[in-house]
Length: 427
Image (cartoon, rainbow, N blue to C red; front, side):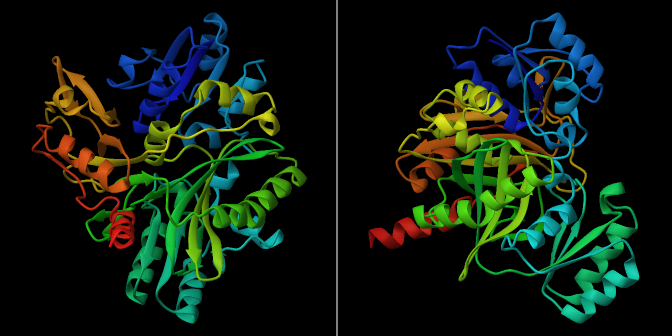
């Protein structure tokens, strides 16, 4: 098969690495890709926002399958536009991608189909939003309705923080994404990421993970796109997976079908595991980043076979096998992130750091004058496997410490909840 992968981040590098291992693959292209992806695929200079240009490339190069990594192109309707040209695509339609593209849409879907989630209000007016916040009180959660690269959520512990977050949204801090705001009840519990491959009818569980959103150790500081993750998530017991499928995923699949927007692609449920069971925080409509990196490390089966089954509506006849090992990834970010990152600093030592159950996935990197340099906020994903999360954690940090990049930083506590569980069980 000839495959085109859309995207340029750490998630796409992990997908490229896994796709490249498939015996079905004859040629892998990536647009626009990054220096790490270039080791697995031929990079092509395509404007992925120009769907007609992408379709022309696919026809000229006999592409059998397009795999869309990031959410932006999906929300913009790339899957529809390519399918209209007879091109097979793994990824949801524009209407189905509203599950990620509009938090308000998803909350209304939850209300209609009795899907457990936080109580909420939707607002396009600052005064009304502030009145709601004053009525509910703090802590409270403020979310820009649209896509904001993982940065449009504020967990406000005080009313002053909530007011400031609302001001930022309506003042344009997130562009059009903040023109509408969702204000949610603050939920307590343990967060988990739950994934399903979907074909419009069937949702097939595709692993669990736990992400670390805050920028600082101990879960402090502003939210980010994700500073690290591990898989599997111990909180997602077989019983919790079964409840999540029955109470959250299956009603969502039914509801989207009834709305005339059947969901096909990756359904990523961000969950809060409360004392009453799983509740939906939000949906994403693609593999998580950095959760994808740990899922690909653990996946035993051929990813390309699974994606084809989803595109062809065959998931009811498909199963997925996982390696027994755990996997953990640590994000190395450029100084300044999640604000304005410092770009252009040279990164050395990646070849020495990789190996022995360690993969380093590139996110925001570039080549400048023959040197690898930082070219984004989240720059590298140092990913390791191990018999336990603790072993994977030790391997990942040992590898990270061999990387020569003084301008980079990371959290030093990725996986802390799982490691604490392992130590408690061993004592």
